Length: 320
Image (cartoon, rainbow, N blue to C red; front, side):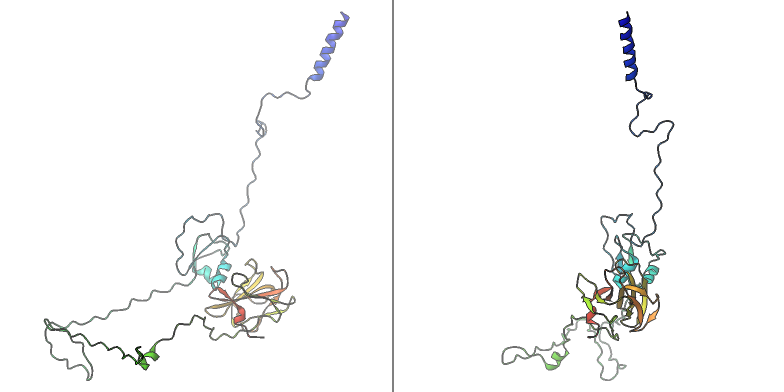
C-alpha cells in the first residue's frame, strides 16, 4: 500500500513538471495575422516628390511615336529645359515662353517643344492672267512700243511655225565640241562644302591658362583650359548672357552667352559667376572666376556652338 502511494505521488509530480508554464493558445492564426485586440500596422504615407529639373519618368514613353516635325524637339527621359536650350542654341526662357511652360523644372517625356519660332506662311505667288486673243486675224497692235515683239496667237487653220533652235557648236578639229567663251564663263561655280566663316565676329581666348583637353567629335564638346582657382574668365565675343547658374549637371557653375543668330559660347566649372541673365557683355570682359565645380581639377571648359551643335573652338580662336 505504501509503495502504491509513492508510485502515484511520483506520477503526479512528473505530470506537473511536464505541463507548460504559459497559457495554451485557443486558436491558430497564420503568421503575421492581427489579433482582435491589436489592429494591423498601417504603411506610412509617402511624401510627395519634390519637383525635379529632369523630364518626368512617371509616364512611360509610348512604344511608337510619330516623326518629330521640323523645328520641334521631342522630350526624352532625363532631359532638362536648360540642356535642350543649350543643344539648340536658344534662350531657355524664350523656349519656355514659346511652349507655355509655367514651371521649367517639369517637362513631360514625349512632349513636343517648338524650338524655332513660328513663321507666317509666305503668300502664294499670284499668277498673272494671260489675255487670249480671239480666233482669226487681228489688226496690228499700234500701242506696242517700237522694237517690241508681241506674242502672236495663231489663227484657226493656220500652220504653226516652230521657232528655230540654236544650232549646236561646231566641232573642233580634234572632234570635240567647243562651247562659246561667254557660255563657259556664265556657268556657276560648284557649291562649296566648307562652312562659311562667321561674319563680324572677332574671337578672343576666354582664359590665359594652358590647353589641356582638345575638342573631339563624339567626345569632348569643347576644350579645357587649366588655371588657378580665381583666375579671370573672359567673354570670347560680344553678346548677351542667356544662362547663368548651376542647373545643368556636369557643367557646374555655368555661363552661356549668345553672340548672334547662330553662335553661342559656354563657360563651365566656374568658382564664381559675375554676370546675370539678360546682361550684355563685351569681348574680353571678365564674366566669371575659374574654379572646379563639377570637375576634378581647376579648369575652364569652353564650348563654341553653331546653331546648337558643338564645333572646335580652336578653329575660331586666334593663334597664340
